[in-house]
Image (cartoon, rainbow, N blue to C red; front, side):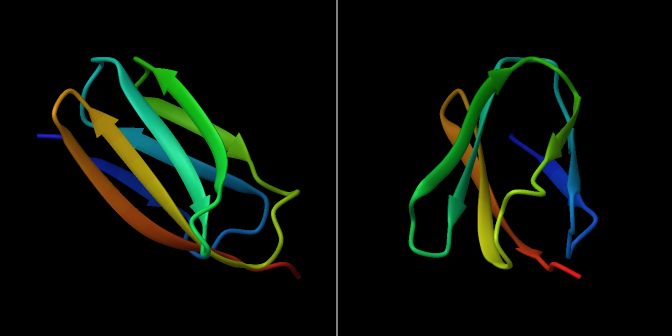
Length: 79
């Protein structure tokens, strides 16, 4: 079962992602219109991404691992 958490939410510059497994997984970030903004395959359990170049709005983070996936929504808020 694939599992992850994103924080902080809402985010301004850096988003942190914790994964429940060291197996290979793909993280994809999409904007509200479904456009792929970012994609990475990793086996790490913790990642930090600089999203300071993202515009304010809602985004989706999709984690895929083997035959399962999970999607979480997060917001980018610029000060």
